[in-house]
Length: 434
Image (cartoon, rainbow, N blue to C red; front, top):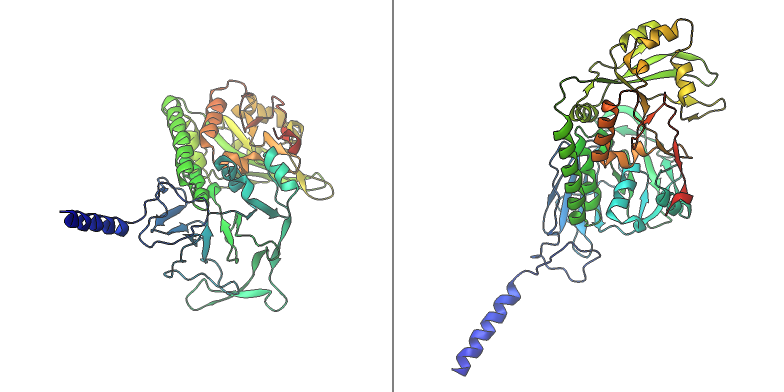
């Protein structure tokens, strides 16, 4: 009897040894011992909206396809074998676009050249992994400004004398067009990758593109994209669920209005000597049109257009209830700054001969409903429009609702600054970090 008991116990122990190791959360560092039967990513994310990326998982790898940049990223758990089914594009490749990039995760030492990535990194609580930034990169977040102040700045390489330009492989037979080869110079810093905005000819640059998502909540889903590089899927799902819930609650409350105000984007085109060459109407992007509709507003549906005559321009925007300005105010010796109300009055010709009469016939002017998305800005001319606004779309929808509900210009918004009401820019710096 004792002998049979021992045999049964031994058999049970052997069976237990054959079971895969169960991980209850994604790893926060490299694994010491690899087990091919273990799922190293029990926490997963999925793109549910028109975000511009999709992601699939195997036991030790994640496959992300950025449909906007055309790049594929293979992320494998550090301490496990890199997948062999996708070959990374060689660093010296002549290929233009559609690069495959393979990196080990989680991230611990990265470079930053993407404002929305900066916002997502802070929301996920992994800002300590930022070890460098692009030379001209600027953010609005005071604490990220403070962190970047003490970090190395990296350059971009535009090829070498022997390989300054390369052939495009965009067509099957090869294309004779020549383009610059762009990459980040990170050789001296041992960085894992650079979060950037564009697909680059660089095996360690990761394109982050919420500004090109077609859906408001799709923009917010880019926090899932960033989280995948840190094994922070559980945190990203929780953050996104909160954004999604608040967004849908606001949408349900305000999207059923019967009278919809029309919103359009416009700019004056001024050169450094102060001469206004004309005016333009910008086409509203799909995500913005959707966000405005969810706030009970209607986006101007026309295409991009340019005007040399002020009266023609005024006629084109005569039905706009709200104008969002996208102009930049050129400086005499190069560069540009943020326009104030006096710049818009001059740039749009509101005070020129007959201009005031024309302008007052436009509802947006008559109701002081002219805005810019630069209410939160840094002294380096960075705007939170490119940063947190790209992820926190619930607050963005809240701004749209306030803009649409105001009778004479909203002044309590988070990102949109009312110019006729002289709402000041909230300039932020590293000294504001608390």
